[in-house]
Every structure is written in C-alpha cells, then in structure tokens.
Length: 307
Picture 1 (cartoon, rainbow, N blue to C red):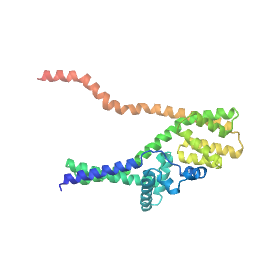
Picture 2: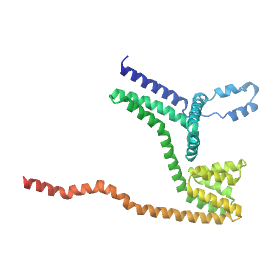
Picture 3: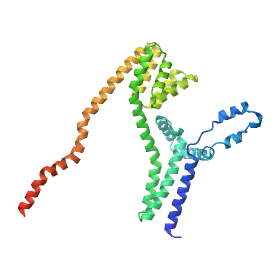
Picture 4: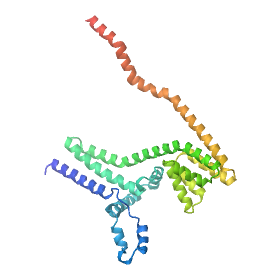
C-alpha cells in the first residue's frame, strides 16, 4: 500500500470520528431525569417507564460520549501535577462555565483535539512533502493548547463585560434601594432590566439565596468566580456594611460614585496612552507613504539628471 493511500485512510478515519462525535454531542433537547422520575408517580400505570427506559431516551452523546470523555479526563487529570485540575476548574468558573464544562471534560477535549489535529497535520505534511514529524508535533501542541487559549479569551471578554456593566447595575441598585426596595428585590430589578454576564451572575446568586444559602456566602462566591477587582471590592463593602449595621443605600451611593470615578480615571489613562500607541502605525505605514510622495519626484529627477 502506498504512503498516499495510508495518509488518505488516516484522514478519512479522523473525519469519520469527528463526525460521530459531533453528531453525538450536538445540541439536542435535554431530558431532565429528576423531572422524568417524578413524572412517573403522576402518570397512569400503563404509561409508566422504568429507569432504564428513561436513561435510554436520552441522546447518544449524553449516554455514551460525555461519560466516556469525563472518565478519560479524570484518568489523565490523575496523572497531571497536583492542583492542575483545580486551576483548570477555576479558569472554567471565571469563564462562566460555558457548555457545562468541567476540568475533566476540558482535559478530554484537549486530548481529542490533540489526536485529531495531530493526525490531520500528519497527513497534510505527508501530502505536501514537508517534514512529517514537524506537522505531527504542531498538530498535537495546537490541539492541546488551543482549548485553554480559547478559554482564556472567554475569561477576558467576560470580565470586560462585567466591568462595563457594573456602573449601570450599581446605579439601578442604588435607585431601587433608595426608593424603598430591599436588596434582594433590587437585585431582581437588575436581573429583569439587563441581560449580560453580571445580571446572569446576580440571578445565580438570587437562586442560591432562595435555596437557603446565606447572602454573604453567595456574594463572596460571586466575587471569587468573577475575577473582577471592582466587583469584589463592591461585595466586600456590602458585607462589611451588613456586619457593622450601616445603611445599605448609603454604601451603594458611595460605591457607585467611586466606581464612576475609577472608570473616568481609566478612560483618561487610556487617552494619554493613545499618542504612544499611534506612534508605531505612523512610523510603519504613514511615514513611508509620505517619503514616497515627497522624495519620489526628487529621486526621479536626480536619476534622469545623472543619466
């Protein structure tokens, strides 16, 4: 068998594997096992389903692929240095837990992408006549590092979204509390008014409080999983005011004014950096064009004059 046929066969196998995985984990209507099991007691006897039938009614990705990837991720996480899985979980929490990711599922995704991209780059370099080992190493490294790099970008974008949404949310909180609403009701108004990462985090906090978790613990957890210093400082001020018995409306007003002042200072600092950041594009793009326009005719004149 020729090397080209081997390469084509490997690429076909990778493509089939990716298609199967994509079909298995595609977004399908989720079946809540708890609701389904509780519904058994309300349903007539002739429509009663067993636990095995309820589990088989779930999509193939939820029954086989996701548990397989989770087990694979847990096994690999056990071989990594101590604390690495915890760091990944912290990063996932900072990103807002996209797609319900966990540390084990992220590690499994890294392994799958590393194998798939490694084989794909191996076949591509073999077809192009390039060094095969170089393509394999590049594909494996890119597939393994890629998910973490993308997750870090999500974390930065989410923290920026929270920072931008915090002043308006604080203003609405302050106005609502001064109008006579309680803090929980004011948070509910913020959740109803805005649709961003901060409002979703506030909604999560409200759900935790309704389930019986103390407000201080829920707010402290919000500050930890957001990773935004301004939000964490606001939460610490709220907790301190609650412990000392200070009026929450006054604290909200002070925090809102302080946050506006910090935001204005950041804008002024960025404006002062604009001239320095414009220097490099001017030197690289604008000045050469000016030199061509100004010195080009003189250079042509000297060239013909010398000739």
